Amino acid sequence: MDKISNVRGRKILNSRGIPTIEVEVEAKGVRGRASIPEGKSVGKYEAVSLPPEEAIENIREKIAPAIIGKEANFKEIDRELIKMDGTENKSNLGANTILGISLACARVQAKLEKKSLFDFLSQFFSSESEDKKEIDLTVLMNIVNGGMHAFGGPDIQEYHIVIKGENLEESIFLGAEIYREMRKFFKGNIGDEGGLVPRFNDNQFPLEAISRVIAEKQVRKKVRLGLDVAASQLFDGEKYKLGQALLSPQALLEFYLRLSKKFDIVYLEDPFCEDDYNSFTILKEKIEGCLIVGDDLTVTHFEKTKKAIEEEAISGIVVKPNQVGTLSEVIDIINFAQKKGIKVIISHRSGETNDSFIADLAVACGAWGIKTGAPARGEEVAKYNRLLEIYYEKKSQD
Image: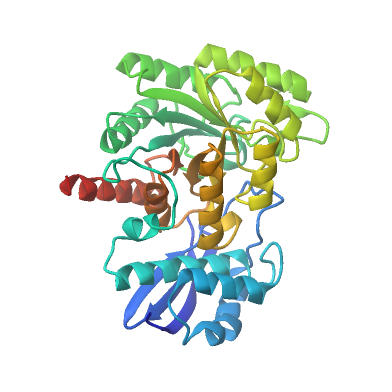
């Protein structure tokens, strides 16, 4: 195995114009880079990201001296950095610091083995696919932004179209077509993830507008509706604020049941606050034909995910690499969830970069779905274009 010869970090901008870090790892003249996103709606159990200046100093003063000369093997480097950090939440070296090195090192390995990144990553996953050349991926495209991603809009954070076309290519282009058509209802602002923003706070109007476009295009069999409520942001410790109403957990549950029947919602993420396993479990039992998904509830954390599965609180999990801090831990969580029959959704963050690593990850692990914003801004389109690139590459192998 070739040894690491250089490691460096630099400061760049994310999609909100806020500084983040890019990391570069080099071995045998081969370089791998990774830039790290940041979320705005952050669960309290997520791993800790450090300010870019502190992260870069850690790379220069602590990490580079420790890993230069070691084999360019991301799993070995991950173990070394987790040990160096010595905390549960990566607060010493920083989850953003460690993840940048982890992902960059994986890219170096892939290049040294002369493999596409998705092909290199696929060897670490236990998902059983009858045809590795076929990408069976649901696209969750963020059409309308609300909550913390779009102040002044609806309380619900993300309104998705859940697309499963004849193939990945059709899914992406169909979603983009619907997004363009939706502009006739929402003119002007877009949110942090490129979704359209209503000029008034009405939590049902976006669902009505999206449903109308889906009906007009006669694509109901391929395009359904989904929500990321981010309910922890609406919770005051006792009740949830939706519009002018203050709802108890039971009242909110009844609201979801009515909404699901009216709009045929098939995906519901973080419907309750991040500690309320019981309400998740009850909703999952009562609602039909809808994936109940943990994000703030599970935060790409092994023990939190394990508890959610044991409580029968979820049927899907969102995986965000920067919530945990190393590729190795991401792989462990995905493999564990898939073995338990839980659907995996690979996700971006609201403060994104042009790095398209998650597209390769979603294909490599055989994820059920991918969330990567609206097809409206460069950082989000980069992921869609990378998915298309992988699709065409696989198709050419047929």
